[in-house]
Length: 430
Image (cartoon, rainbow, N blue to C red; front, side, top):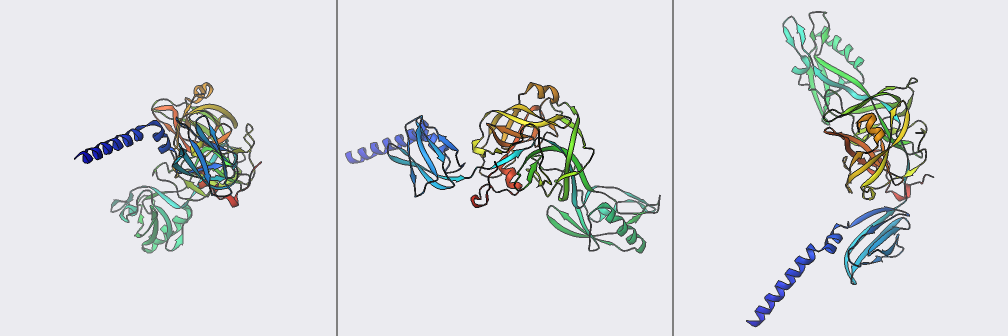
């Protein structure tokens, strides 16, 4: 009986001890430390602790160095490679962190205002219209099951690249009375259908009852480029068609220089906008090969300068971004890139690509006076913190134009086809 009581007392004591440990500050601190961490050569991270903690490095030829500092442990990347850091409390191992050290990667920050010209893959259906025939009004395209947002890629087995490719097939089918064999792409699915053109009684032309478009244009801001590969990233978000609201599937495209002519100031509930025109020479400075949720990407034809920060800067990984002051580079007048103050309100250390990694707030009085905050056309403006490129401006909060989202730079680099984690393929930019 007495032994049972002793066992119960010990059990309660252990349970209470575990509960106390779980809610203790040191335990919470160690739980929050990631199991895997990536850092750059010559840089490091400090694991803060409210109690004295030690660390050891497991394995030969370690890629990191460790230092007990202010009650915590500083881990510094000394050379490329992987190491295991064991955190210890009173000599007892309590946490293992796998640290991957990669070479520092640098890019040139952008800030330039750019004009964007996209050519779609096939022709995009942006609406239906009724053909006024002697038998009444009908839309052949709608009858054929073609929807707004569909992309027509082939007619009668022939590839369709632009709107002018469509008309000859329509008129020929109208005269012969044959149906058109249409191939469309819808949400990555290929669909085949048949469409019979109808004659408009007003001008005797044959029509398919569809509004179509083969290109789109707009403005945005350059984020970065890599002078070694000439790959660039801009905008920080996907370009969607203004009518269908769906992402534009890009066949090809170009970027050109643009000039900001005026600003429509933003206010609560009404986003502002940069009004700009393509530069007079309209010569292409780069191509567009990808339109993704993280922006547009391609290759520049030549080096470009922003006139204010024309030097390669290291990038910061998402876990390195801190709440606090930062800068953005953007154009609000003519083609002059300027530097403005912002505040990083929050940042999420992301393990996987995601578009909304940061919340930023415009704090610069000059920019607030000029634009009211973040406006359309500012998307892609690079964000600089502590001498590093940390990301780009993406979306404005409609009800608070002074604030908006930012995307982390590492995900834009990934979308551009730059793998910063492949140690044997990296080159340094001086």
